[in-house]
Length: 511
Image 1 (tube, rainbow, N blue to C red):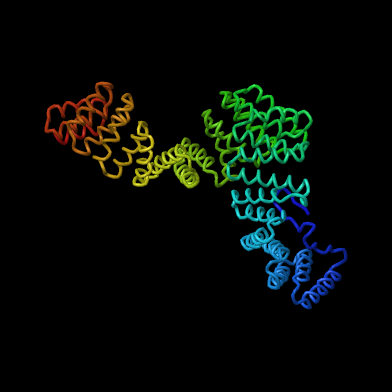
Image 2 (cartoon, helix red, strand yellow):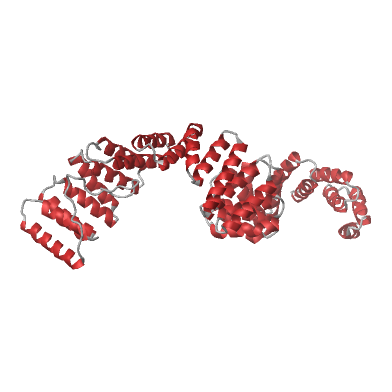
């Protein structure tokens, strides 16, 4: 019986009917199956010839014909576990995993002591993505392991339990299962590593360090050093982590594992960036792209590092490459949208932000994507879409003066002047020193015919800047709106003297 890491079906155990070995050529195989078929058709109340035929057909890679033979055996004797077992193998080989599960369920119901029935039921449940049930089925197999199952069978069953527990996120249980496998095979380095990895993912990495450090001493596997580095990071031992990563990099290089080297360099760069060593981190990311230019993580992190350093044009190429390599990544699309936004490419920025919105799930990232989409929809003249996106940004970031300002701009451009006012007012409250928010607030007050409020805003602006011709001009309109012609004339005269042509025209028209 052969079992491999819980991913392949076990063939019958010693007490089950063994499939015939194909020692001769295809012609002899056909002759043998013909003889078995004749024997099966001659038998009336015995399912075994049909099972023998089904097993031969399975070994001949003819699952459809094997299924028919096993169904005949089931029809002769429904209690034949070998018939249900063979039928399960045939259905699994055909890709009908739901049908295979039914057959293996029957094996475990009718012959509950069969290890292979429980084991293959577990494999089938795993294939059907039912990990909690699969883990329990592997445990059922272990309970029925003695005396027929070998040590390898039992190890693989425990590995099956661990794999399914990892799928459910129960890394504590996975670590325990790997520990049980190690009790059977205590010198298995791969099991030691897998148990350590599960312990780390369960937040118990320090428990794994003694075994891992011993393993590192006798192994050249770069994964061991990389896992030690992860454990040290979680423990706050950054210097130890950096040393472990360097060892992992050397081992990956010696093994010729270029993809692993790139992944480790990305991990090293992220650690360096977390320490504020941005230039060194960018160098690590750049080296990763040279070693493996197909690594989207390397391209993405290089682009983000350059973007954060203000080198937006340099960031664009690695981000575009990352986007080609990982077109479904919301994080990449968001970074690319930010680069396009900074480079004043509104069409590209809006498209990339929309793709990010379709893929992201983390709320802060979604909000940033909406902000970029909203700003660039505005720049493209789609003010209604801009307002829809920006209002959601304001809901998520009520304390952002920039979000309030942009939402006010979008509302103003849709003609909702009164609706724009509260956003501008809030922007001024949040950033009283920003003249842009005050200028736009004054414009919204004028458009909404709130002339006294507009006068207050523009008087403050001209007090702050006596050469602000446009604010003098708008102050004149605020005063005209209140029918205060004399002060309005003075304001326009001041604007005209400052060279503002529209103010001179207003003076000529009204006075």
